[in-house]
Length: 310
Length: 222
Image (cartoon, rainbow over all chains, first blue to last red):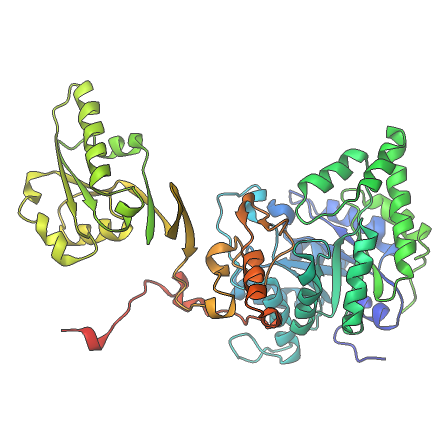
């Protein structure tokens, strides 16, 4: 068994060879901690860790770190998402230490949606580091015990470090080289963009496996159940880098409106069951957007429950 | 070159309305090429202002002058002998020219007549596009000659991000994804192996972050 780099349950589950399960919780657009806690408690027993998004789609929300702390205090393991859009290297390192002070054991490094999508379109963006450099930064802080500036850190952060991958963005041919680059920077786990085009995903992970990349990182397949045919069309046409095949839309359109959500869950469960068998898939990241209550059902029906004792 | 665009006439009128004698000062360099602040634009702006104030029943003196450059002492000196004839100057130079004139003529109100946009190229007739943000540490040797600092909306040095779709940026389908362009160039150069070299954390101290920048050359000083 590999040596552990953190106190992360997610790390232990993945390193023990179990399929890991994570989900996602978007902090509220307000300061009520109960909203975060409620979402966390809905999924607590069905996942290994919960990602907390960082001002996703550039809409101003409660800070990811604060929401992570609320979850952590409830005994729910958070994955702190951190984007490079809003903070420079001083603030990023500072927040990493802040997270580590609460023993938040996982982090996902992202560049973040452009601010023009959000409620502060006239704001500056920072991008002092990019997502790969943020991965390098956390690894450096953890492994060398040093700040980027070279000074020693007292009690370095013990954080299991992840990055995102989008197997479907353009150009496709660099999607695997880009994954290789993230791994070279130190990404220990990968959570992918929502997968609907199963064939394309399989091709991507096959190419990754051919290069030995699936041995070097844990790839968690991103899953988002469709609530309706309208959502499927929106994802296909409006969300950058999303690949929704026509057959998914046709299947949802083929059932009556009040049954579409159920069909969306069925598709999600079928996809998980299919991908469970694919070499290199180390787990699932189930992003049920504002639909957290469905996560337990998806996890159970996919045969991923109960979560292993670690 | 420096790309600028004309300010809305309403904004200029608002700025100059309280002055009686106004000099419109053009520049023969970049702003002439990008058709925002050369001799032709000086004439047009002066005419529009004259007409506007005439219609308002106000008598104003509106002078016109275009200098070879406004970012050079030598040329800015050319207006010293006429400057007392005016109460304010509307400079159609880039922000550099406006400031250089302001520094030279301490008691003269200097008002910008253009918005300075970027360092760019004349891509097509009537189309100017950004190419450089003067970050002070050029990375073009490593990126196939295409700049991720100025042309990627997130300044991603290890791109593309997940928002690249059909060669376009997530912010607009009219904006090329810089990293698509970089990859196209690396392929054309048969240098795709370079793609996997990780660009290290960048030293931004040579960029805006380091404060106002200067270049000092002892060898060319007098």
